[in-house]
Image (cartoon, rainbow, N blue to C red; front, side):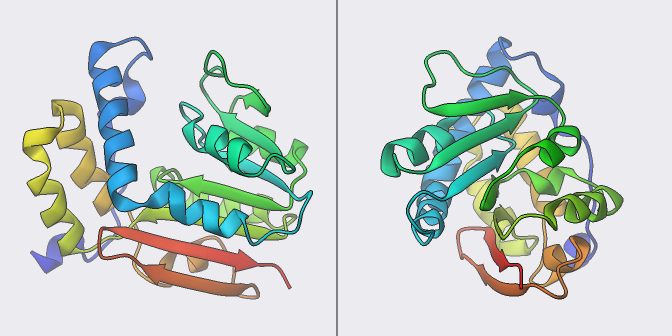
Length: 213
């Protein structure tokens, strides 16, 4: 079983190919909200953003439904929030500068003190991560919460099967296999000269904060 997860494998996830109004996509997004809540991912990001000085700016990549950005605006009203995603801005989202499009094209046009991403960069190949890392070099702080590529998260995912839909049952193990082990994400992004703070949460997250020297 350990050999299955020995190397990083990036494969398409079903959710990425579904239209936003597809019932299976709506179910999968509900599953993701449940999973992120159970893993404490958004709360961890909030703690990292809270370390920034007043008036600092944040950009979230892969913002999805805007849930994290909305939480950050509510918790830190003095901070400027920008969100980047392929999807349109969710209805009713206020206080966030939403930019729709490819993160690789939009990020060079964005200025912020911190870049945050939750369960997003594992979708990228090693080559794409290297490209992303070059784009991130102009920012001061990075904060990513991604799947931990290990057997334990696969076990937890299997236990969730009765609670989630068919799309999530497929995408969960795919995400874990595309995830990272300690040290990998920083290396793939080319952060050798950055100050790194990294941890693994037993619920399945690999958490990385990096500061540019």
